[in-house]
Length: 135
Image (cartoon, rainbow, N blue to C red; front, side, top):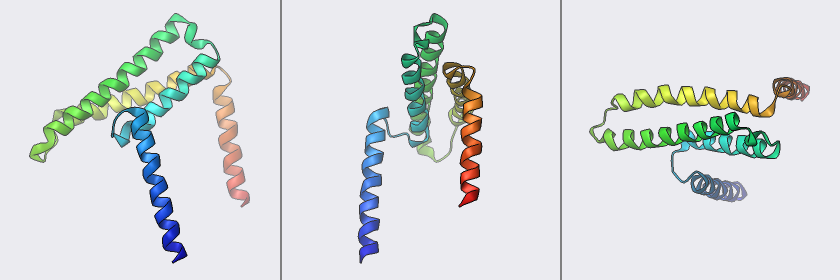
């Protein structure tokens, strides 16, 4: 009975988390929710480090936002056209656009974090792996 209660509570918590994320990204597209959250994190770091004040970086941040918005609109177009049960060209364009935006967000994150970012990320990854093997 206790196990059932734990599953019920965790299910409710997961539902609330999903609602919060859907409200945060203003949509129900779970596939792209992580990309919007990633952009929010990049923007927060850019503002904190004053990188967002540079015109070129500000343009790249705006381009990332526009790219995500295009991806969201393309997903809506794909869903609207999928009534026949088959996916058309819009789905293939969406996959290609997703790969490009995902790559660009990674490069943007590295540029916002600065030259030390890859070293710090690699160090943290190696430490996490080592801690995992110690258990």
